[in-house]
Amino acid sequence: MDQQTSHNWTFLSNYGHILLALAQNPGARLRDLAERVGITERAVHRLLSEMEAAGVIARRRDGRRNTYTIRRSVRLRHPIEGHRTVGDLLDLVSAPGRRRTRRAAG
Image (cartoon, rainbow, N blue to C red):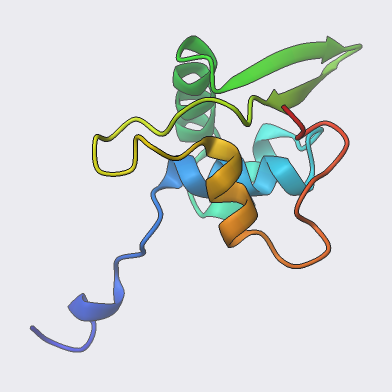
């Protein structure tokens, strides 16, 4: 494996990255999330829609903006980590002092 190829992956998926970004800023715009995660706004919209359909997040309209609430009690989807919740993941990976935001509570 060459040096460049070995550095192109991360432990968390874009779903996880979006959840972490929303935990820090529940009112983030699609543009903000796309920039933070490093994907397109269209991809962010698709991933948010999938997480909303799965019950992981709830979207509330605030005027022209959306605010997202993370449902921390939802279990992770894969059988290997299904004994853990979204909140467990956020607590593990979030920076100290940013573990729970007002809207990220679930």
